[in-house]
Length: 172
Image (cartoon, rainbow, N blue to C red):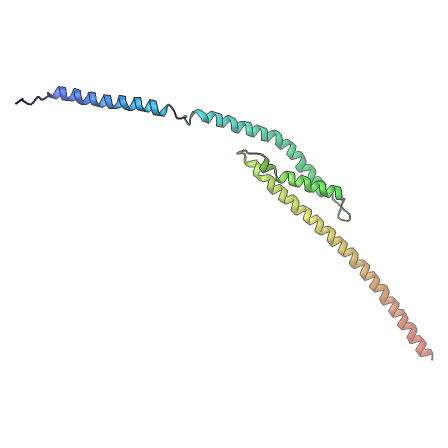
């Protein structure tokens, strides 16, 4: 039979401290081995920021071109004649409106300004519809004026004929 071997308090503390340090060293070693394979989210933040800045600068340069189209389209719609709009101008306005509307689909950017272009295109389409309604109303008014003139002429002719008939009856 062997006797129990016990450690003193000081040796127990050192052994406990040794086990804790070995556990930390093992965790550190395993952390380095496994986490070394993963990409750090902080490494790509600069790349993402640079991509966003690139997209924004690309959109800024393209926005200058788009703004020219937006302005010219508005001027064309404003100067559109209600009596007889030109077919080429109407086609060009529709083409520009479609181009403005598709701006959001052509660019992938976090810029909020891009959300306004479909709204501008919708506004232009509504403005064009108003111009078409104005043309239709003008045409209807002209047709009504012609009809009223014809009715007035017919009424006057009828009135003249009845007046002549009354005179003819009175003379008999």
